[in-house]
Image (cartoon, rainbow, N blue to C red; front, top):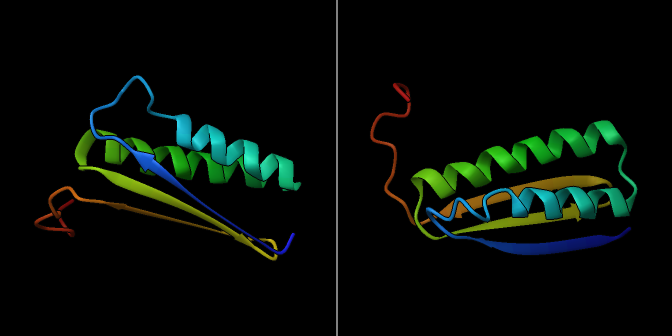
Length: 88
C-alpha cells in the first residue's frame, strides 16, 4: 500500500448517521490489512472525534490518510472554539 487519502463529511446534529465515518474507516483499514488491535483503536478514535463533531461542532470533515503503514486522521469543523482548553 503506497498512499490512500479519503475525506468524509460530518453533519452536525445528525445522530441517525453518527458512527458511519468510523465504520468506513474500520472497513478500509481491515481491507488494507491492518491487524485487529490497530483497527479497533483507530475505529474508537474515529468514532470519538466523529461524534464530538456531531454533538458539538458545525459542518465537519474527517480526513483519513494511510501512507506506508502509518494512519493519520484529521478532523475539522466549523463549530465555535473551546474558550478554556485547560478547563475542558
